[in-house]
Amino acid sequence: MKKKGPAFAKTIAKARSLRREMTPAEERLWAALRDRQLGGLKFRRQHPYAQFVLDFFCAERLLAVELDGGIHAAPAVAAHDAARAEFLTQRGVQVLRFTNAEVENNLPHVLRRILAAAPSPLSRCASPSGEGAGGEG
Image 1 (cartoon, rainbow, N blue to C red):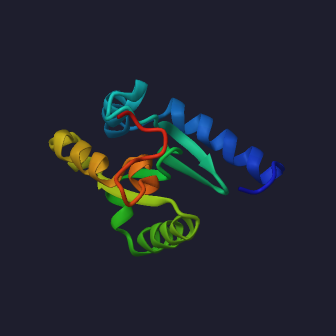
Image 2 (cartoon, rainbow, N blue to C red; image 1 turned 180 degrees about the horizontal axis):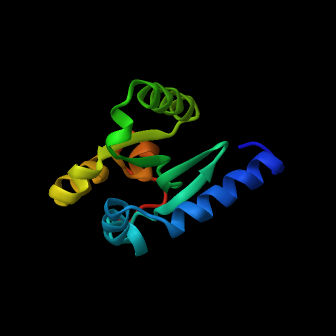
Image 3 (tube, helix red, strand yellow; image 1 turned 135 degrees about the vertical axis):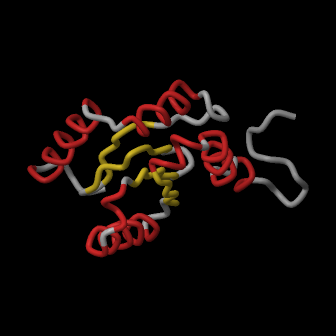
């Protein structure tokens, strides 16, 4: 991440503003993600990352969850979303995108997909013998 400076301060201010003005879909998903309710994963909402603000971010698993309203279907916005996803992917961040309608109409499916995309850090560190580093045994 870039060092703090005027651009970073602007991103933080934008994140704070977005936290106060969450969409109904964001509020619904946040209610399901907050306080480690989903698989013990700690999510942050409207999290500054470089020059972007991620809707939801799990730093431990490098997982970003983005919600898209109808505006994201516009070609220019879709192109911006793709470039942003590429930027994040190059830094090891996995990006999941859902429409607001998916969250509103089928939240359990959205939550299952988020869990499936967030492999345990122990699974990345497991030895060939199956013994994970620091795991419960």
